[in-house]
Length: 206
Image 1 (cartoon, rainbow, N blue to C red):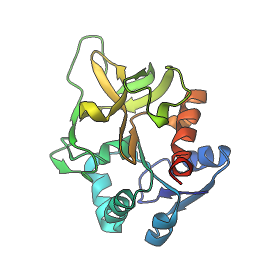
Image 2: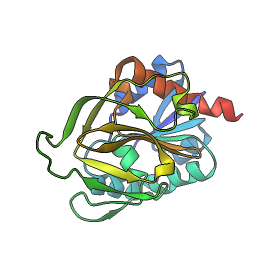
Image 3: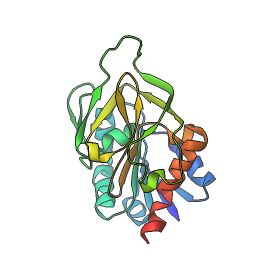
Image 4: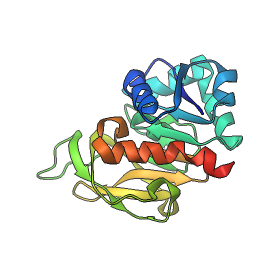
């Protein structure tokens, strides 16, 4: 099975690619629309600012490609900033429109005593929908976060949250579109298992 990792100039492409290959899949880092749309699964990574990332996606045409993949039923996974890009909008450095594959806005963490911004380090997941195929066979554990903004997701799309002074969106899913706010490729055994569960979705649909 081939996994397309969308190359739009922003993201931990190498580490995500290596994690995919470690799980026994063929990893293809690409900006080729045909290759992405022919892949079994699509991963949208991301590191940096929301507005810059959306600009890169639009300039490369990858915004339409990711939307087309989602509309075609391919499993799509956004990681870290990639997850935030799936939402309707973000307030990071101004108001920016997202891919609008999931309803909701991305907002900055409000100042709270005892909680630094960015939210950085290991934090525990709390499953909201343990019956989700993305969480199959897993138990709640710690994963690695680095972010200053968080998504206000619809309740029905929340698969898991973490606590940082309040519940924070950690994993989302709607139909074939999923997102992880943390870095599964840097989150030890649980992160790799979550990534593996995502990559198995296409086989389950076949």
